[in-house]
Length: 352
Image (cartoon, rainbow, N blue to C red; front, side):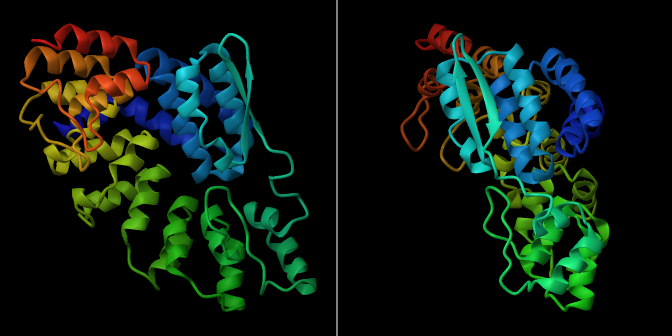
């Protein structure tokens, strides 16, 4: 059954994989069409979830930050967000060296902070684009001993770690083989973001896969290696942090977990609109709670999943007044996130 879902939602999965690995303006134009036709028109993805996931993409593909800001602004121009949704949506954009301009009629625009992207003459830019000849020339005149490099939302990287993150295989090989730079555990983890197989293999000679690797495999939509992880059962469902699956909208990870252990996706699967088909298929423990006591209905309220909410209220014995660890009910969450359809559904059933 899980393989059927993988096939059914292949267009959603492929669109996100292309979005997270975008490299050129031409590719961006293709992705914009896919976003509109597949994610928005076909799957009705909530605009705030979509934009949140694009902000997350910046963390794993910083090289293309200019393309991502263009995409976000195109989406915002056609899909205004309410002030209530804008507050949490833009709360952490400064993490990515971005700022937001607010205009009338719920219109917003995202801009990159000036002077934050590497200059073409900087060593970070050389690594970013794997300019090995320029890099070799640079180190003939400059020491790398005190060079630390910055990618937004991360701690400072060493030059070798930066190479792993950007997949700069030529400079990585030069630093490691010729200058004896040591491969850290962080190098291995970051290599799954860069996605260069040669760098990954070299790092795995020094360190074993860990949960940090798994997080980056999922979050960066490194789906080729994600398949490898599941085929070889390298991790168990409990090793997956579902918040990263949600934030990156990696539906493939959810479906592979479902294949391995059905109930492992309850209750957080309601963050995905596609979960309705899975939940309706039966053979799931719909009363299962998250670590913070959030229920399926809580996730419906947070992520505006009207379809699953309707199904739960009509076809199950879900506790409509259940409380999470902070004593929030699903209705509290729906009000907090200004999800009017969910509020109405819960209110109509509150005294059933």
